[in-house]
Image 1: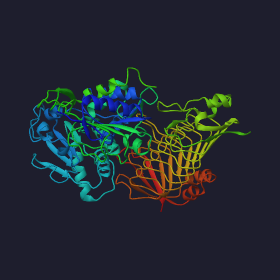
Image 2: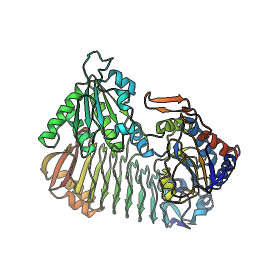
Image 3: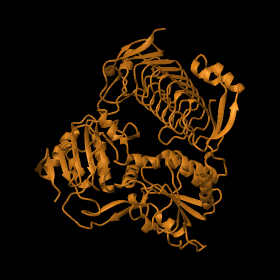
Image 4: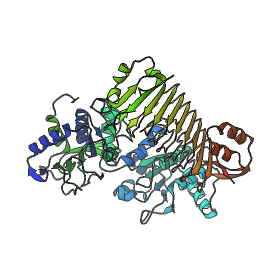
Length: 364
Length: 268
């Protein structure tokens, strides 16, 4: 049974929801942060933000916008892991955190197996840029290229693949040309990236490479994205407001701004004066360093820097209760049944209860 | 003609959108009408009258006495006239500016001069990240006009610059001139890592270049006639920029990863 507390003292869920509604409705500018929840939880939270005329943000926004900013300013060509496993004759892995990000990645992509839908039955060619320690171990023959600066390495590789001059040492140049040759000769190549090592500029460079390669062959991308259902929450936000996260209802209509509605920035600058923190997938604590009134819907065992005014322990989607969330395996939102059904409430349950105390119409 | 003066009463407790306070929107409005204009971005109402003491004058020339980093969109869509801000301002100062003169004596937040297409924008203090850059989902940054920053600027100044000139007299953060399409960016102070990343065309002039990306290739030393002409044009706005342009300059072409028709110059 999930437990609810007001100022650290155990209370009933109903009492906690009522107190939470009171705290949130008194705020000048409330912000819903974290947002690690399934589609139903995100939907309830965005409806609550509209009622409160507050803003909402996700805990992994930096990673979300590294990909999304490229998508909306330059375009991205992406595929699904299944398509990649079945057809790709070349994999280009980038970054050292890929298997940490997605432990089942190697199982899903099976890079060491011959792609069944490729007409030429040959083992895949595997390339890995900046694999770090252990990144490229035990999965067939991997050609690696170490990089101290992914920006510069990806730029040089793209330039060599386009047949243009670059200014680097002979050994590096030979290696770059070898990589560029494999990429250009791919029948269907897939670049796989993820982790904190890439920002929107390096992803735009990588995508430029993919676009260049598509002039003569087929090549696509597979971004691993961020955890805590980041992609699912972004899609939910998209179909509800037309915008991704970092959106505010302050003026009564949704307004998106990646700088102004960064939850941590809003709180530390004093613009947001109350926060609702949501983390159903793990005991993540709020990242800000300022003690403001806080309502938390968090996993049990979350360690907070300051005890929240109201804290409700919630269940994990797909474990304690059924959920619908973005699955990397298929690249879409899928439903999952509870594996260890429990009494712990879901984010959607608790947020709806809070919302009931706020009346029907948005408060102006 | 007397200017229209807005004196800030106190630091606002929410971010305010000052987009309505530009000459072409205030022209012909009485002080009373102006005082009623709403600026809030949260559910708490905040009008011009709540926020500023207004001294009536010609809307062709607007002065803000006292600023705050919470005042966004000052000079947005300005077409003509003048706005002078004595103090700091927030995000998107001079956003989509197309004409007139916009001056800030203090510091500003990110996206100053974002997508400006004409006019003159001067920042006496420091500017934030993404100077002149496009906002979320937009394809082009600054497309014309002149921007001068006397202090330092943050990361990715001149991102997706399309046309126009940016002069930074102080230092610039990382990736200056990222994704430039055309136009000119001049940095007189220090410069952060990887200038001109993903640039297609355009010109970057750096007084103190960092190590360039391997995708910029040496094209030798030049004494360009055009740089001298441009130097003469810039002299009234920035003597130091004019001096830099009149020196012999080393030219590197790039970003070879993108189109490779851009150039970075620095004194040899």
